[in-house]
Length: 434
Image (cartoon, rainbow, N blue to C red; front, side, top):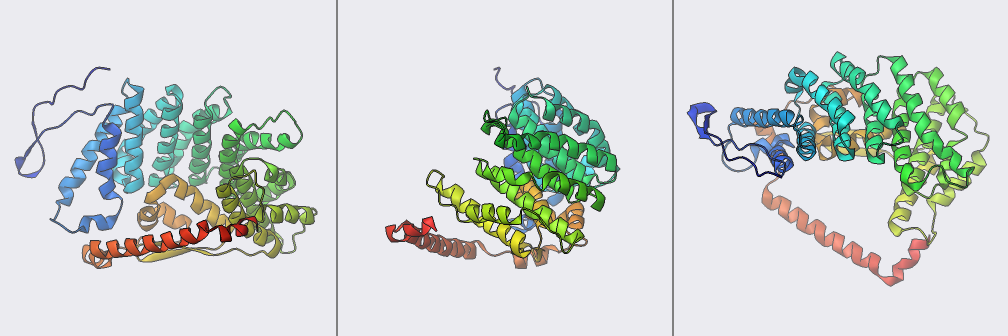
């Protein structure tokens, strides 16, 4: 691969006519550049970090300048450079609200994403699909997101149904299609069409119990999980009449997936069942399920699973989740969770809300808290009201000092070490089987 070009001549940029050397983006440093540059925008309080004051306007200009460079690089001939540019844009969109910037360039970005999904390989297609999700999250449920879905929807469906495409790309496209359709909720026809596309994928896992050849192989199970979770997300916004149809179609078949040898499929199927029961009981308070006794037996077995052939980590994860699922199915109970972000907090008190939160948490990662504070679309989804405006002085008083943070981390480390030491004691290993 040819070496990167020498630095160009100095360009006069910024206030005061300062001269800066502008280094062209290369394959090797494109992703690193974005990650390092965007890390400072992951938290609004970072602008009040201890140290010399920063010119926010100049910093924002420099940030947008880099983003424009990444947009240009999505058209590069090198696949590695295109993928790094997509990852750079993705990191930026998860760490900062860029509505105005994206609004002006949404057509260019959509065209670049479409080209990368059509002509790229597995990793590039996956990165492009994730970026498409983030574009819709930033733009919200307006006509701009509708245009993105109209352009990318057919391409995403084609990749999802293409058996020759990589599982990784099909998985990312399934999630992207579900999330984008969830955001653009006005077109009911598109909603039903998308759900049918996803159903055609994950229902293949139903046949596993009847086919000894294993149509739903371990290799395809990852795709089926993503399709099932995306379908479940869309079910939460369906009209009551459509929910009733889906209950009749899937409520008696989903328990078969609880026997899958993949722990993530078992958990996905269990959480979907809990959500279906929740929706059914909202429509009919005295909802009756014929095979309740058999289902609760399966759930109890999974909630107390002690099979030695399964990994300890998988068993712990499974038992924790299925205890909640069993309680939901048997007792109609949900363990309320509290999510804190800045001065606010949100209570997750039902399976519908949990499914929605988990989907966007997986997409936004560490940027979820920032988006809950500032993203109007997400705040509308979770009924949080308009964003709470805090001035720089308030943010500074809320931010703990580095010394206090060090003391807290040290105490947490000591407590964690003591807890793990007790768990490693052979005398407590007996508890693993209960």
